[in-house]
Image 1 (tube, rainbow, N blue to C red):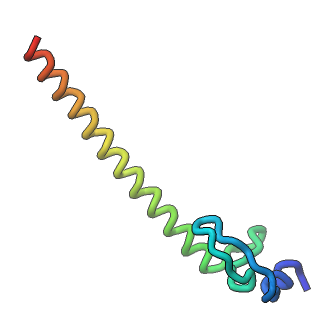
Image 2: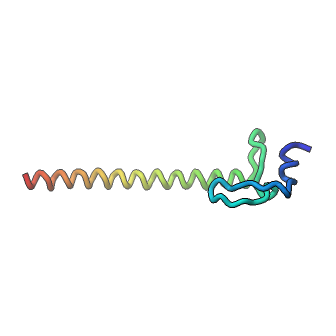
Image 3: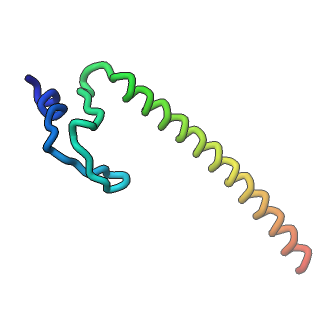
Length: 82
């Protein structure tokens, strides 16, 4: 039995979620060997994270454009008063 299989069967071993701090049985975690082809759940999670990162980049670009426009508009207004 591999270590991964042993951990998946360890019903009395609890771990803490790094995101929320909640404890849960290790046997309920989606454990996998990253040296092997990724399981469907891991691939799905990676796709979700990539989509989230793409959306964050889009939002940052929009904020940057807005900040530049605001900066230019502010300079025009300041120049008008001087």
